[in-house]
Structure formats: structure tokens, C-alpha cells
Image 1 (cartoon, rainbow, N blue to C red):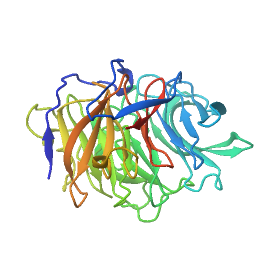
Image 2: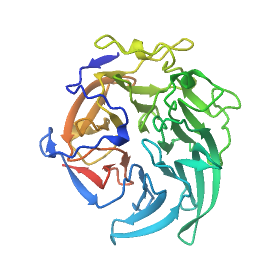
Image 3: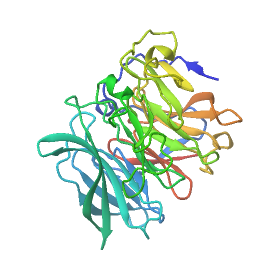
Length: 364
């Protein structure tokens, strides 16, 4: 059942990656806090883990990919992607490792780049050789808009070992309803960059459409369902359960009628139209998310997912219904000192998040 949550903030987030106001950290759940893992970083807006627990992270504006060994506390420079444009919400925005890494030594990144004088959002694959990145290969390319907003950028391998990616609508809501381009879509690729068998639109990378812009998604470890956080305009930040081939109904008919329902920003394109499972009337600047599956926090956290927001630097916890198909409750559990951007789960199950200058672990 869809629920409404009236957010306490009225701040409209024009560009999630542009607004970061440090403030005091505080716990809403007794004992829950964030422990700094590594600080002094340069906009690590995306990160992931290898099977040994080492952190792989990108720098949004420099195009640099680095690793951090949590045992030795040493950094390693892996590769610098050329031509990255970090203006606004552009930049190096996503990173994933092949699901069979390191046996399959492939590293994937999502970046906004200048290519022959044109801006493109691209998914790139690198091969690790002797500890360094090599053999840069473009797996997918999409036109990046003249506006520096709504580029998406989250990438993650699913339980099916396919690579999923969010591409924003390029600040043009019409794109989200056009199946002939990749903008405003959730995409699904093979690890080699091909269209996988079973994609809902034959010959297309498109997995779902009608998407505005997103910085977070993750897979429910119990059901394998895909959940996504999505930024609204002046209203209706969303939590969505993404189903293959479905229309999430962002498009040219969008409007913001405050205090009504999500139908005013989800009313475009063919039916059936999928409404969010949960939404915030006033935008919170919703960012990354990660599921708790033995995440070593309190018992109520098991089976929930955590997600961030930048307007108040809050981390929230969402509880699913027994069937795990809709949202039961959402509550603020921690307020960070800086904007939480990307969320990931370590090989040990712990939940980590990044800010513009560091990576933290949630602990209790």
C-alpha cells in the first residue's frame, strides 16, 4: 500500500551533488552512529568493495579511481579516466566490480565525459593488470544534456550477474518516455556490454522507463527485487520497486501540486503506470540506499534498507511489509555531520556510506 510521508524540510534540491551543509551528527536510534573509515577524500560519490574488503572509490571531478586497503591504511591509484566533466551533477558517478572479481579482473565505471567535443554519459570497463587499470572500453554511451543535471550514474551488478545502471532524463522530462534513447531509464547490460536475453524490450538495454533522476538503488537479498530512490522536482522524492518493462510515469505531463499525491509527477506515458511505494511531499534530496542483511546493527534493522538525504543530512530506515512488496514505515535513525551520498554493503554485511570528503560505517 502506498504511503505518504510529509517531510519536515521544505528545501528544494535543484542538484543533489551541489548542496552539502555540514552540521552536527546525532543519533535518533540510541547507540546508532557512524564511524569514520577514511577521510580527507576528494568527492568520493561512488564506492564499492572487492571480496577482500578493500574499498574502491572514484573522485567525482578528477576521473580518478583509487583503492583503500582498510588493514594497511594505504591508498593505491588504479586509473584516471580522461575527459571527465565534473560540473554540477556530472562527473565520475558510479563504480562496480565484476561479480566474479578478481578471477574476472574487470572494473566498471559510469562517467560524464567530453568525447570529441560532445558530452556523453558512458559506462566504461577497465581490465586490472598488475594492479593498474588498462584496456579502457566503452560499453554504453548516451547523450548528456547541456544542463549539468540529471545524469544519474549509479551502477551495480544484480543477483543475475547483469549490470544495472540509472541514466537520468538529462533535465528534459520528455526523454523518460522515449524508448528510443537511454535517458530517464533503468538499464540492464551483460558484463560484456551486450543486451541480455530476457530484457523486456527486445534489442534494447532498457529495463524500466519513466525515471527522472536517481542516485541510489539496491537489490533485496531476500527476494532479489530491485528498489530505487528517485529525486522529484519541487515535490515527491520517491522510493520505488522497479519491475521489468514497467513505466514509472515521469514525463512531459509532470507537475507539482503540493499536498496531493504522487500522480501529479507520475502521469505520463502508457498504462499501467507504476506509482512509488512511498513518497515525500516536500523534497528531501534523496540519495543512495543499501539493504541490511546481517549488517550488525540492532534487531529492527534486519531486512530493512537504509537511505540518505542531503537536505538535512539524515539517514533513514525503511521497513518492508511481510510480502516485501511495499513500504511499511520510514524513520530517521541518524543525522550525519555531512551529506550522505552513496551507500554500500561490505562483504561482511556492514553498511557504509560516503560523504563529499570521507567514507563511514554505520555501527551500534
